[in-house]
Length: 416
Image (cartoon, rainbow, N blue to C red; front, side, top):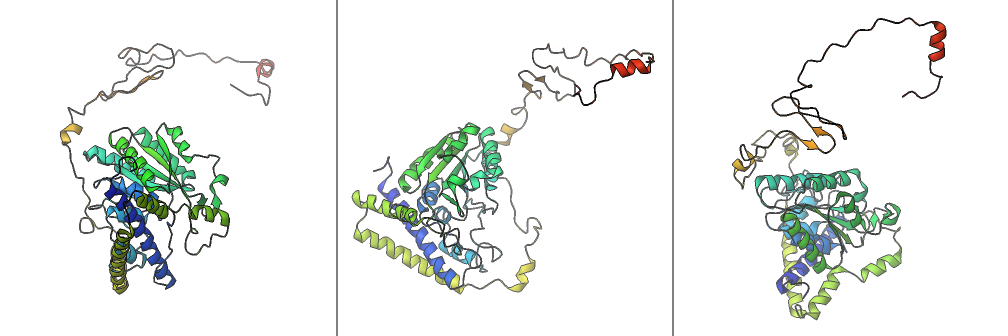
C-alpha cells in the first residue's frame, strides 16, 4: 500500500479516473453528432492529475479548474449532467446555456471558481481566495492548475510572487504535458524541472509522476497540509503527456508517433489498475461492478442532457448586468471574531522601518525621522519640524563673454 493510502481511497481514485474518461468519451460522441456547442478539450492521459490533486482537498477548500480538469469537478461533487448540459449549452446547465465548456462554478456549495480563458489569470484570483479565507478564519486552502505553456505568462509569475509574499494557503498544480498547443516544452523554456520556477519566489516545490495517481495524491496532500498550516504556497509540477490534440479539431500530427506509443504504455488508469490487482484490491467482479455503475450513471445523465431544452430566445436579454441581490448575493461568511481584526487587538504602530531607509510618516501626521545609509537620523521634532530658514540672496554676477566661453562645458560631454 502506497504511503498509508487506504484500500477505499485507492478504489475511489480508480473510480474517479474511470468516470473522468467515460464522461469525456461520451462527450466525444456528442461532439461528433454536432450536439456540443463550441470546442471540446480532452484530458486523456492526464486523469491522474485532476483526480489525485482534487482528492487531496477538504470539503471546504476551494478550486478553480482549467479546460482539462473535468476530473477535479467530478471529485468535488459536480454531477456529469452539469458537465454535459454545459457543453451542450442547454437551459438546464449551470449557466442556463449562456456559456460553454467548463466555464461554470459554484461559490456557495462546492466552492468552485469558474475557469478564466486567459491562461494564468486564475493564479492571482485563487491567491486572493486563499487570503480572504484566512482573513475570515475559514482555514481553507485554494488550488488551481496551469499548463507548461501557461507557466511562461507574466501573470503566472506575478500571481505566484503575490502568493509567496503573502504566504497564502495556496497550491498551484503545473501540468507539464509537454506541449503548449504545438510547441514542445523544450522550445519555450530552458528548464528540465518547471518546478524550479518556485525558487525565484522562495517557496517549496515538488516534481511528481503525473501518471501515478497515488503519488500525485500523496504529494498534493502533503502540500495542502503545509499550506493549511501557514507555511505559504506550494508549486507542484506533474509530468505527463497530452494524448490528444489541443482540442477535437487538432489531429496533433506534430507529435512524434513514438512519443505517443511510449506514453500509451504509461496510461494512468492502466497503471493504477495493475497496482490494485497486485494488492488484491480489485478483481474481475469488482471491476465489472464499477463499469456497470459508471455506465448506468452516464446513461441517465446523458439522457437528461439530450432531453433538456435550449434556452428560450427572451432569456438572452436577462442577466447581462448584475442588478444586486436579486441577481446574486455574495457576502462574507465570518468564522472568526471580528474583534481580532479591529482595534485595539489589531492596532500597530503606523510607522514602518526599513534598514538603511529610516522611517516613514506616522499616522498622527507628524514627520518621523528618515535617513539613508549610514547617515545619522534626524531627530523627530527638531530640524524637520522647524520652519526652514530663508536662503541668503546673492547679487547677480556679471561675467565677460570671454570668461563664459572659457568655462562652458564641451559640447556633447555628459553632464553630471
